[in-house]
Amino acid sequence: MSISLNENLVKKKRRFLKADTQQKPLDTVLKSSKSSCVLELKDVTKSFGGLVAVDSASLAFSKGKITGLIGPNGAGKTTLFNLITGFLKPDVGTIHFNGYTINGLPPWQIAQFGIGRLFQDVRVFDKLTALENVLLARKEQPGENPLVSLFRRKSALNVEKKNMDEARKWIKFVELEEKEASLGENLSYGQQKLLAIARLLAGGFEALLLDEPTAGINPQMVKSVLNVIRRLAQAGKTVVVIEHNMNVIMEISDWVYFMDEGKVVTFGLPREILGDPEVRKAYLGI
Ligand SMILES: Nc1ncnc2c1ncn2[C@@H]1O[C@H](COP(=O)(O)OP(=O)(O)O)[C@@H](O)[C@H]1O
Ligand SMILES: [Mg+2]
Image 1 (spheres, helix red, strand yellow):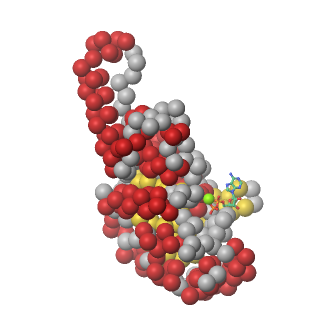
Image 2 (cartoon, rainbow, N blue to C red):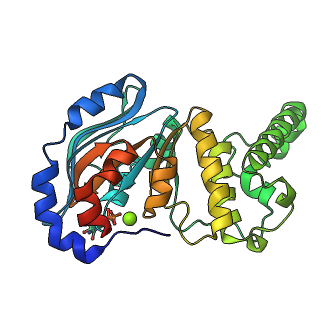
Image 3 (cartoon, rainbow, N blue to C red):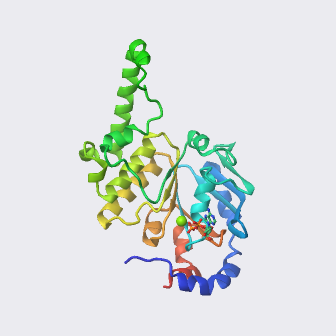
């Protein structure tokens, strides 16, 4: 059974739920996960004209853990990813990654710090093979300069070999090795998502922000994607997942943030958040 947010109930019960859950000891839970926390937002606010899309939000994401980010449409989840990755700048508040302040930096610099993002509409290069798609993500490329290839042929070849080995390693990690010679356009949508994850990994990112990684793919492929996400956390990545499917959240998250109207309404273990009778009643309609 697929459980999804019930928007009508959300609207009806919104006020009531807020009053009820704001009492939750967010700070206490946050403190307990603080030691290994690498990505942290403090009192971040972002407005578009009169609309406060993210409202004094404080969140922490831990290394080696999967944190789910849930909430109805318009809650501010994607805006939060845009703020972390530098596509938007916070009006107020700070964002720290591995002890560095990253808010205000341009996206390319934030990417260099090691924060990568999987977009909701996965775009792979149709006319390139799976392997070539991943190779493109490697930061160090020997280039086409004839002088470089003349004088530094050996080192260029070494870099090429290393890039190839790395690309193959990550294609294998997402279990697409049998597809490495297939063109992007010949992969299923789920396989394209896996390929996009392999590209993030080949790019050397430490924190991975995944916007609805299982949306629109078949149940068998959902399993593969979830397995890969689990293994990312086991490999020590900091994983943040925006997800509408509550079964998925329950299955893979170590921690869950529930956002609504730009605010973090509640935070805790998935069974606490999704098992909370008021959350279930008001937001899940069950
Ligand atoms: N670039 C933008 N300009 C104006 N309003 C925006 C922009 N991006 C998001 N919003 C608004 O901010 C709110 C939060 O949106 P979003 O972060 O996309 O929510 P979610 O991802 O949780 O569905 C929504 O009301 C949305 O319409
Ligand atoms: Mg969104």
